[in-house]
Length: 216
Image (cartoon, rainbow, N blue to C red):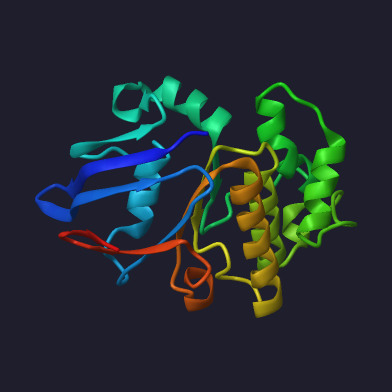
């Protein structure tokens, strides 16, 4: 059970501030939605939480791990073991089939669990598509591959950038059910960036990001 702490985080590009004074905590098993105007830095904040981007002030800790004290290799190993990330642009690997894409986090951890991979494909409605290549799928199907991949290794920290943006309302609700099940059943911390009122309505807390900080 590992909480996420964000303390007085600030980020800028050159002389242009992106956000500042961002402070919040996400408990294990808690779902926090982050909303805000376009361009305010919501995706950048999510990348900072994953250790994919740097920040200029403040800090991020996950349990006893201070992300600011890790080098690039250590951050990559931390992400591999503890983070599931649903990217807005999917980041599905085109040379791997669907099942291999979903299995990738397990393979990186030295695990081989075809049964768990198939259960994830079943859960996102891709039961019979494991052997297909990504270029044979629709945008909504690719989004579901990305979500299955983010969940398959049962990460302690789930980060999702507009995970329902390419999905019809029924599939979007199903995906939110999956994300919430992972959060509740395995004590994960879920941080979700969204413009969807329906997705945000299911959160335990909704935080609004502005250039000057964050409000809940």
